Amino acid sequence: MPKVAAPMDVKLMNATTTVLFLGALVLGLVALVQWAAHQPVFAIRGISVVGDVVHNNDVTLRANLGGKIKGTFFTVDLNATKAAFEAVPWVRKAVVRREFPNRLRVVLQEQQAAAYWGDDSESRLVNTFGEVFEANVGEVDHDQMPRLNGPQEQAGQILGMYQTLAPVLAPLDMTLEQLTLTKRGGWRMQTDAGGEVELGRGTAEEITQRLQRFIGTVGQVTQVYGRTVDAVEQADLRYPEGYALRLRGVTTLAAPPPVPKTKTTGH
Image (cartoon, rainbow, N blue to C red; front, top):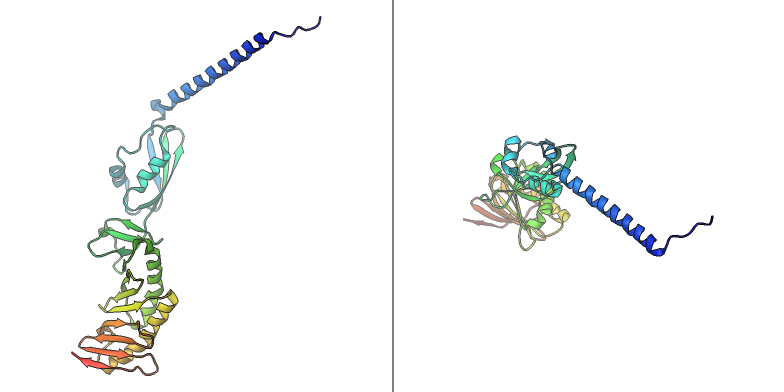
């Protein structure tokens, strides 16, 4: 017998029924998943913290994170959890992952302090990436760590200049204690002997050459006045052919080698 096609209205009714069934099934599954996701069995039971952590421990992390991590294994907001960890002092970066069925795994990267930032009253530091961050400076145990100053957005450049200039002072057995980038773009440094040196503006190469010229001749100048380089109180290297030098008790103007030219005014 030949097959008789179902009327159009019957086909439409069957299709509608199928769609409604599938829709109800999907909604049911969604509701089931949502119900299961909120069940106590999936509540966060523990957080594993790994990484080279020096300034934080279980106590400090709990104190800073209390109540900030909400939800179950399925509903916890990983981005919000990441932000909560990164708001903890000394934490630079956090990576958060789920560990089935009810745990989180957090990999922490702590800040590595490279320098103090700002004046003595501030509680800010610069990390090895040239980023300024807030921290308890009393936890820093680097006695030889320098102090940097300047526009915060240029902290990386200032740290880089420090790393370039610090070794240049080695022949004088001095330490670069403080480096400042002024608002006009000039560089100023202070040594551990208390001497302040105006380096002027320019590229890292230009500033380095200027400082090397000074280091190569300043010893000759100080000897003329019976003093050592530790007696340098102020030096201005912004002159094209020499530098102005103030020793304790003497002011002199010196030119680069082979023979420094001096002009002395007694105090």
